[in-house]
Image 1: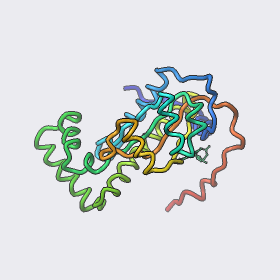
Image 2: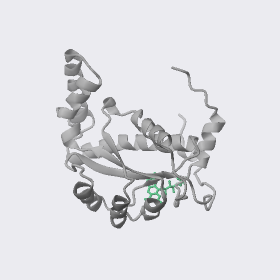
Image 3: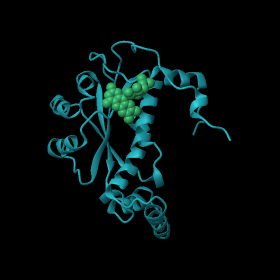
Amino acid sequence: MNIPNISKDAILNAFQYRHATKEFDASRQLTDEDINFILSTANLSPSSFGFEPWHFVVVQDPELREALKPVAWGAPLKLDTASHFILGLSMKAPMTKWDSDYIMHMMKDVKQFPEDVIEMYSKFYREFQERDFNLDSDKKLFDWASKQTYIALANMMTSAALNGIDSCPIEGFHEDKVNALLQEKFGIDTNKYGLSYMVAFGYRKAEPPHAKTRRPLEDIVTWK
Ligand SMILES: Cc1cc2nc3c(=O)[nH]c(=O)nc-3n(C[C@H](O)[C@H](O)[C@H](O)COP(=O)(O)O)c2cc1C
C-alpha cells in the first residue's frame, strides 16, 4: 500500500472547486470508470463498528428520474441534467439492531470473525446500542445509520471534486412521499431502508454565481 502523497494545495483546491452545482451540462457524461471510482470511495468509507449501514441506488432510468420530481423539490433541474443521480439509503432497525441477521452476516461472512470474536463483538455492540448511545427507537436507529451514510456522501463529493467532477447533495424532498415511491416504483423494501439524501454528479453548466462564503476558522474552532 502506497502512502498517499497528494499536496495540501491540490486537496484544498478541490474543496474550493466543489460547489453545490445547481445545473449540469447535460451533454457531458461521467465514464463508467468515473462513477465506479466515486462509488468505491463510498464503499471504503468508515462506519460505526464497520457495519456499513447503507445502500446506494444509481438512478439512470429517465422514467424513474421523472417520477422523483414531484416528491423532490430540490432536485428537478439536477434530475434533468446530471450525468449520474444517486439515492443514499440507510438501513433501518430490522437491519442494524445488534441481534439482526444482517449484523450476523457482516460479522460472519464479510468480516469473517471466528465464533468467539462474534460473541464478544455482539455483546459490545448490544451495550453500545442499548446503554451508551440509547438507540432505543426505530427513529434513533435510522438516524444513527444515516449519520454514517453522510460520511460516504462527503467522501463521494470530495473524491469527485479531486477529479474535476461536480456534484450536488440534495435533501429537498418529502420524506414520506419519496419513501412511498421507493417502495412502489423502485422495488426497495422500506421496512429495511429509508432515504437519507440524494446526490447528483456531472459537470457544471456554468461557473458558480458567487464566491464561496464560509465563517472564519476562528469562529468554528476552539483550542483549549
Ligand atoms: C445535506 C445537504 C442537503 C442539501 N440539499 C440541497 C438541495 O436540496 N438542493 C440544493 O440545490 N442544494 C442543496 N444543498 C447544497 C447547500 O445549499 C450548499 O452545500 C451550501 O449552500 C454551501 O454551498 P457550497 O456547497 O456551494 O459550498 C445541500 C447540502 C447539504 C450538505
